[in-house]
Image 1 (cartoon, rainbow, N blue to C red):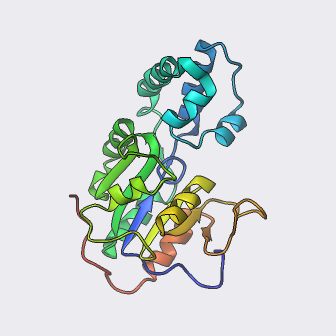
Image 2 (tube, helix red, strand yellow):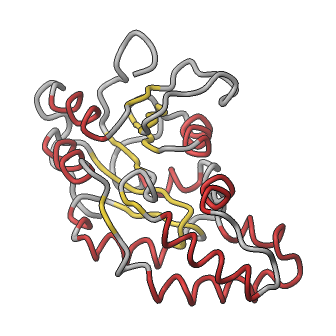
Length: 232
C-alpha cells in the first residue's frame, strides 16, 4: 500500500470492471484482432492489446480507423457479443471483497469504459447485480471515464457525493485519473506498485497487490458505515 496510512474509510466504492474484478483480456484481444483483420490492419500481440486498450471505443476507434470507425465498431461488437459471456471469469478474491464492503454498509457501483449493455449483461451473468447500486458503462453518461460524468451518474440516488468518502478502485492510470478528476480516493489494485513517472504524482494513490489484501483492510474497518447497499 502506497503511503503511510490506509485510505479513509469509504461510504461508497466505485469499481472499474475489466481486469479489476473480472479477467477479460483474452476476450478483448480476440475481438480486437478480429476487427483489425477485417479492416486490413496488422494484428496486435497480446501485450499490445493490454497496453493500448484503455479508452472507450467511441473515443479510440475514430483515431484508429478514421472514417470507417463505425464499421469497425460493428465488427468488434459482433465478435464480442458472440464470446464475452462464455469467456467471463471473476478474478480471485473479487466477490469476497464486494461482499465485505456490502457487509460494512458501503454503497457499491461500477464505472467502466465497456459498452453499458455488455457490461450489465456480464454483471447479471455473474449474479453480481445484487452488490451494485448502479452499473455505468461507456455511452451511459455524456462523457466516458476519465471524465467525472460517469462517477456522478454512478452515485445518483446513493446519498453519497463524490469526494474523499468514495474510493475509485481500478488497475490502470485511467482509473487513477478518473478518481482524481472526480475528487475521489484512487485505490490501485494490481500486482505491481506505481512505477516512477507512471503517474503525474504518486501521492494519494493507495496500492494493494490483490483483492485479498484490500479485503483484509475492509474487514478491519469499524462496524457498518452507512446502512446496507441497495439498488436504486
